[in-house]
Length: 493
Ligand code: AMP
Ligand code: MG
Image (tube, rainbow, N blue to C red; front, side):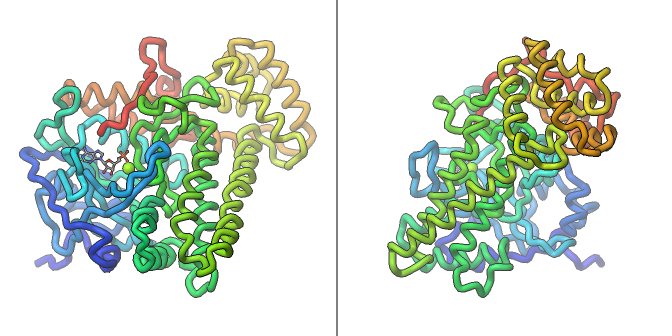
């Protein structure tokens, strides 16, 4: 007899007081079908991957209760588009439980779309197939790009209908995260002046994500600084690959520093600083180039929430918080400059690096150049000027592009880096493949309308190696044709 359960849970969040969560039960799925299962991730988590591959439809729809599961919806608050909502919580998601993975890291396993919870408000707690596929594709693509993110473990269709503007097939997504604790989790308890809960939460976060701070007298302020550093680095990484999160509300910012909550997110095709995809972001609050500013805004809310833990003297607490928050701006500027240098192949830092890179971005915006293809083409130009015409072809104004290339070549020349080495380094930070919106959309339509998951599977295969040329898949590196372009993305709620 096999005595070991398919998932060996080791739950810590539910050791916190009951006011941190509410018990949750997944709704029954009438005809669950597993259409995606991440075998490699299951292995990494130390799960019984073979059992789960065979029983995944029941397990990942929530129909089969696993022994030792926590099954709770977590509570949080959040600023949504700047407006504070004192109680949000997991309205369509539940924490199944935690596992300690093969490397010894604690990870959450979470079901999204499994039915209503105590915090569903007027929502149905369900998810439709489209948004589930979208999160699956984009989160795994982010991981392959080397960017901290929640992961996709599995996805099932439920066999039930979800009602949005139209009837849609229902689905459940299984997400894995370092934790699901958000800036908004702190805000929830801060809004209730529940200092005891704040302290328990901060201690939990430090133990889980910042254990090096344990025992430090100033640990709560140092925690703010550590979160600032991780978020600064994360946002610089998003911008490296042209990613727009789209809904950076404080409840969608994880204190672990992982990308979380892929709703209306999208990758830029033709570059523009103020690009917005989300249908609900009318004022461009979460536009591409606004992400560091809004990241900092969110972290100020975080520092405010943690304030009571910093010092009993409020003036001193505020002073310490202000100091902690500065870490964000400094880290972001450092990280972004590093990203820009790497993207244009500068190996030896110099005074003019930022201006040279910024000038290129401006030209790309004016020239409607494709963000991904332009930097990839620049790597080819690093090898030989024979490739310059290909780079210039990405721009409306080719002469301006050629002029910038000449300036760039003169600037980087003579740093002693061999052309092939420069190009190879550039190709490691400038992907050939990103999850382009129109490709995601095509994969969703084929699955939803025809039950055909072959486009989804092809996309997943290409995106697993984004920095390799993969000539057989060259069409996936192409920008959308005018009739394929996806101008708007939706939360899918
Ligand atoms: P989001 O903007 O997707 O991060 O969601 C914001 C809030 O709305 C969270 O508290 C979600 O749990 C909740 N929510 C989103 N969609 C649903 C739904 N279909 N049913 C219940 N709650 C939902
Ligand atoms: Mg959310």
